[in-house]
Length: 245
Image 1 (tube, helix red, strand yellow):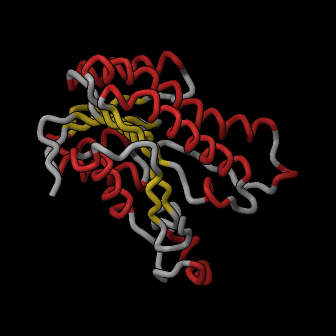
Image 2 (tube, helix red, strand yellow):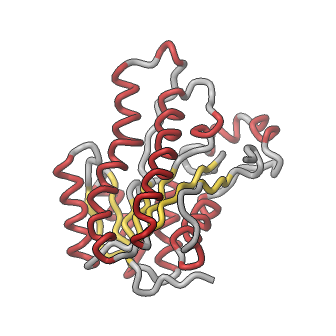
Image 3 (cartoon, rainbow, N blue to C red):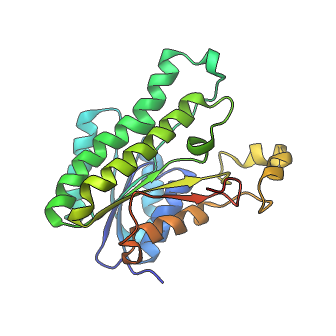
């Protein structure tokens, strides 16, 4: 259905359960992909798994401005351009509101929001010059509905949605779209035990099950494709009906 031959993709958080599948799906559809994460060993393992479609990888601390610049320069050196940016990296440290420290709060804002803002600014320069681009931000269902014990995480993900909408308005005339994906409960290696031990969580999901990283990747493929050229500033909800809006 989708053909990304000739297109290039930069994916942050690519060693995660969702990011790695997004990378694989883009490569399966013909794209060249450059990946980043925090650990060399995981990045090397992922590159081997991805095969020839992986143009390279770069270990980067997304909180470090020099690392962000080096990441982009490395991606350009490997691929020549960045057509599609997938901001998939993120963290969560769950705590009740009154127990969240300044350090907790700032860490969520810096990783989940500020790093996305900074990297997107860097990548947009090339997209605007080329008059083409797709920016896809991985938000969360809790950024739309809130969730007890996740005030810092939900706030950072909600702010990402505001940034997505505003940027979409600013760059639409340059043939650049900016959209977000808000996944619900997605089964990954990190969440599998939680979901297995708490089957009651599915009671609030009309589909009666958790989603998979492939479900999220399918949304990313659509938002990055030519088919979605008239879709911008939107949030694609992938949650089995848990939140309908």
